[in-house]
Length: 153
Length: 117
Image 1 (cartoon, rainbow over the protein chains, first blue to last red):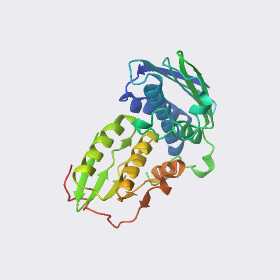
Image 2: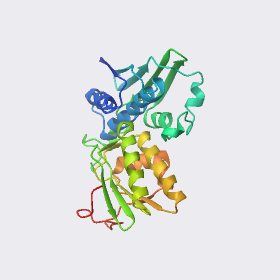
Image 3: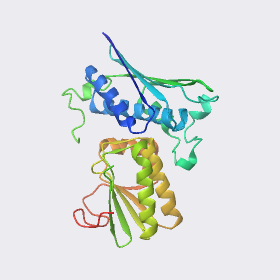
């Protein structure tokens, strides 16, 4: 079964929590573990934060969050129509940041890579950036058969 | 944001919010730095007992406070990390920068007492 949702929201930091919770709620249809839900939340939070800080440089704009569920796969894309970038590879290097004065850790893309299975970044200066991430849900099913996941929560 | 600060004898315990992201990072950074400077804080404890979510924006705040405390010869530690927070610490390498204490022993300032900043 294929299921898709799309949300458009203002590029305001207060919406970061809304975006990751929305994605997490949609993904629950696949019966993920708590850890898998947390992975998706973290990845969405990183991508949306990048769109707000770097894409729109904290000015007005819209962020587009799309989630597609297909089989046991989740596809998440976060898109902005902001400034874009010319060197995606450099931006994805761990600890690389264009905003050290904001104490950005430079770990945003590293986190997306760590918590999702795959990440694709399309960007053009002046056009915006689209980050598409995929993750297979249910990879650790045998360890969490009761569906409760982590007992420490 | 529902962050609380307890100060006692040059030690400050920051009760971290439920979710630590870019949205709350700026306020957290501003308040913490103000208190660290004003009260000559030598030991800083990040208490994560309420924290369920943290992304790389939160990591930036922690690394920043670590650097600032390091310049003045202070100590930084983190407490009460749940499994998710432990994972975030390991993935980011924070566990190598900040001493993580999980035991029941208090670092400073009583849980229930202490002033709120």
